[in-house]
Length: 471
Ligand code: B12
Image 1 (cartoon, rainbow, N blue to C red):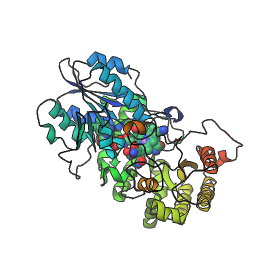
Image 2 (cartoon, helix red, strand yellow):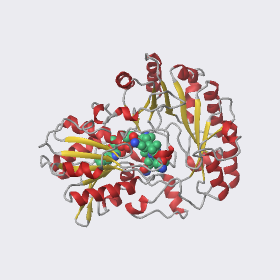
Image 3 (cartoon, protein in one colour):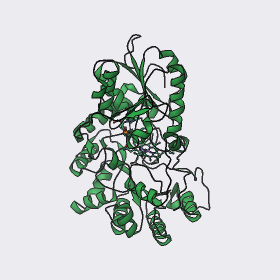
Image 4 (cartoon, rainbow, N blue to C red):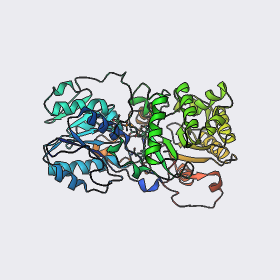
């Protein structure tokens, strides 16, 4: 990143907010660069509010020194926000960056937010280096905190704010109403977008990621999504299309990877989006996540829908299958679709020549060897479909805030008891009582496998940790 590129009209006297996206390890294993949308939405709202300058620091991409940035601005820093998700060592990197800030400017509030903080706000706020935690969508809560820090409104009025005062964690006095609506980004120049445009071999030479909705109405029991927003919030199709057309123009894009948990949650909206994307000129290639049951629903309405998706530029669909066993799908995961439904969806996607990227999970609490084997058999069946879809296995990792996490804890999983403890929680290296050596071997061999590659004798580059997919 080049200095100044992501600073809103800076003036020496204005207070400054730095929003930091700490590094995620294994980034080197991905072929891609992810726009830190979490912080972009917040920075965008702060620019609109007009009270402060804003800098977004993406530690995955930024070439500036963190210490240098803080020292240079220490006299006007109003607060620094850190985004954290569980895993990928992001929490431990956040703690280090917060320590540097505390050393340079001890009085500047260190505000934490993001998926991990949303789930465990009180434990996060209790960490000695954390002064505030804001849960939920930061574009609605952060401007309110800024106004309070500037003395323009009472701190008690800030929704969903947890404060670490002396040795105590004070819970929020207010909550954000659940019926907030999602607005588009207005200040794309807050990030040097060009550095996030990458080639994706299954999509297009100039591909950028894009987020058009929050949440998912399915209730898969291992997934964090249901914890976060409870409701599904989405930008209208027309807004998304205009926004994407602008980005295509500005960045000469040829591809879009949708970040949405499930782009097809709202079918009429998704179809409107699809038709609009199909009409864009020049034509874009794109990829998205879809729940296998949504493929079933779309096909039941019109068997031609998947072909229409391909005609509209859809090149890859990320599909979470999780298990090939009906009991596991029904009782443990509550996936909302059975094995036959998944196989039918996979065949339809294949017939439309869209690349399916299928993910499977092994090692759910209470899963038997036979059930795991059915999953492996089904993955193989899918991997050898004519288009040779991508198939990956992951070990089940209990993420806090999910219903299955409670089951895992009841069945003997011992979760970390502090933010520091969660810093070491790693999705790739974690072991639970439900993963044995056979499972680990399957996960290793299939971590970046396609039907074709499975025929190869062994280790292709990046086989142990590779985990790319639509993400
Ligand atoms: C892109 C992405 C990634 C990228 C991250 C890079 C990047 N720059 O974003 C990559 C691919 C590296 C990644 C990796 C992983 N990811 Co991921 N990822 C996502 C994804 C698809 C989008 C994230 C996003 O931008 N969301 C949109 C923004 C706007 O939402 P948000 O992050 O929640 O931010 C809002 C609020 O939380 C809040 N907020 C966020 N930060 C802050 C900070 C402050 C100060 C404040 C006040 C508020 C605030 O305000 C934001 C704006 O509204 C999400 C799913 C999703 N659709 O959200 C999963 C998700 C974040 N990932 C998740 C997980 C588990 C992982 C992995 C650990 C495992 C995996 N799934 O691969 C790995 C870990 C890394 C590794 N070892 O490889 C989980 C996190 C669950 C949790 N409890 O933390 C999610 C939610 C998926 C899920 N449903 O389970 N991921």
